[in-house]
Length: 177
Image (cartoon, rainbow, N blue to C red):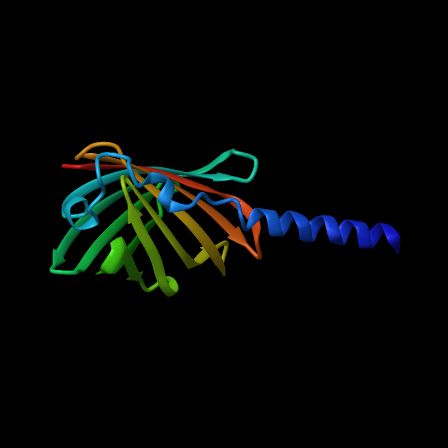
């Protein structure tokens, strides 16, 4: 009984610490070039990515063709995914720029609204994605970080969790045409 309590406490502590691992966005305030989502996600972009499981093994590779446009504070990111296993997927993000470098976004497979903030060269998105896996759909939380490298290239790293448990990462490189 005592052993079960200790194991339960250790698991709860690990989950609590795992949920606090993200850096504050303000750490990027002085970083250049400054990220303006309306400017960067405008036009055609190509993205190249991998999904790694919790051990770091690459389990899926993919490319994304993105058609992006803005009308004032409202943006559309139309994404066509091609996966290494031959499957295809489409996601259309509808973004809204808010005061203070904040953004919110919606897509058909996002539960509720994605919330984000851009500071300096970085953007942090947080959202829950309905992720299909082997015939089931799981609600997975994303802590998504993007870093503008120059006017053409942005890097993206997103951690995925379910019930606070680390599942793996998505790593992407975006390139403007």
